[in-house]
Image (cartoon, rainbow, N blue to C red; front, side, top):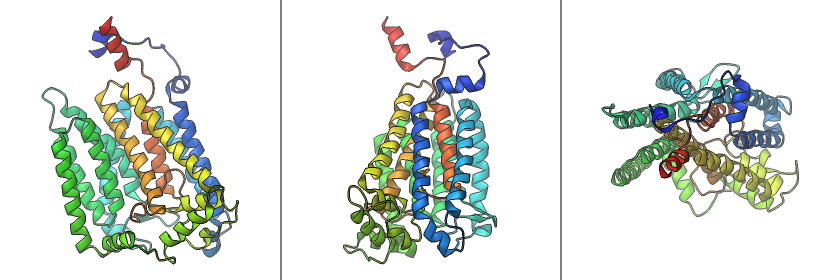
Length: 388
């Protein structure tokens, strides 16, 4: 109906999938993603050998695994980005149902690998973290509900998405995984704001989050310990935050040199949660700024393309994915420089981790699918036509 009223851009009949995909996909965003993964492999060569030696593996064992995970992630990204938005939505809803069940049974069949939080399924040869795969499919599912609520006589999709968010946040907090809980809540809040939520409701939600944080602080030793460590004026040099702070300070502007860093021998999570500390120590502020610029380019370009999109579902889903991608990177780097409490969150495409890298590939593949150029025209085309 929209095309009948406003017209449509010409479609190339019978165009093969690959040429059509290459013509319509955002190549700059895809290039930035590939560069981020390349940086991750580069830092893996520096950060992972000490851990491999400690665990009795070959020096580049984790780099090889990261390359394998990355190849799987790139394939997932390419395949997903070729899909039409309707197919992405259908698969995301099915994927959400599977991830929800996996999260539901995690307390029974999951493991904590000695880290104090039951977040993984152990498969013997590898492990799977359901919350990583839950994030992108959750965003798309909630965007579908919110978009449906904007239709005439549509369902109460905003209320449904809110109820779903509360359940997911509660399940993640019980692991406990407050970092992923905050990320899920933030992603939903951004989409709800874009969908036209009243400001008073968002302020009320912010108050509820503060109240929930206060309750968690007084009733969760895990949560309280991290908040106390963050608020303490002194940093214990023997903690991960202490090692990371020293490494960033030592790196300066140009770094101490490739392979000359010492933090990787002290930090057990140097190749995952604190990979940015390795980058800052060995390559200096220059590489850190390059990494920040790559994340910024991906998010800004995606949002600019989404601003021209006419379909409310695509706008909401794409905005939620871009916002969650950006905030996860901000949280990881913010923890390393002690701007945020420790949360155990990876840096997308840079940190080591199969679930994280592959799930990030799926999420960015969805974002690329939503930001592809479409034959139905853009909002600017419509406004220009009306002006004439």
